[in-house]
Image (cartoon, rainbow, N blue to C red; front, side):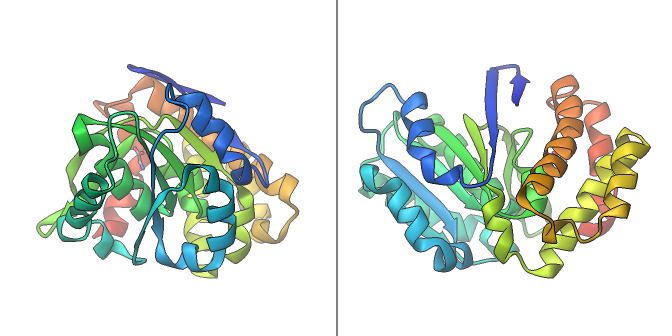
Length: 249
Ligand code: GLY
């Protein structure tokens, strides 16, 4: 699936086991035969998927930076040292930053990509259901301020989104429920088809990969309609915040 933006379009790849082929996406985005790569990854995700991540990116000898799980990683204090690592490792304007994790990582890594050297390419690799169906799509990146959530940020479309349902196998039940609630939200916004599908499949994550993939695809299609029509949230996109403000509070 492609998402159209004011700056072009980006591709969403959705397939079980597709992460291991991430080098193909990197090469297709890069005009340099060996771009420098920085991976910003959730510490827990890295602990579980270290081998997969390292093997899939071995050809690029990437800089790997782990951030602890949780909202505190979406802060100026947490991300400032990462700019220093990018500079010390001589990342340049042809470099690509890859965010691997849930919404916190996608938002923080995307914000770093949008500001480092005035913007470098960015690949979203969401590993939670919530990030797969919502936060990785639509280009919102940012960090929190002590006075409020998401107060510092921008609209910065990724260059690609790679969704591999393989990562859902180790998702904590609370996180899975959060993602299902987001699918339900898309159901409310799109009509009863998806809404009823979510309600009748509360155990969706236990189903086989094909069914999960179809389900994620249906949900992303809803988000696509909203973000393509109102990329910068001047109107209709605000509907996607249904339940968010309440939950943030
Ligand atoms: N998560 C709501 C939005 O992307 O607009």
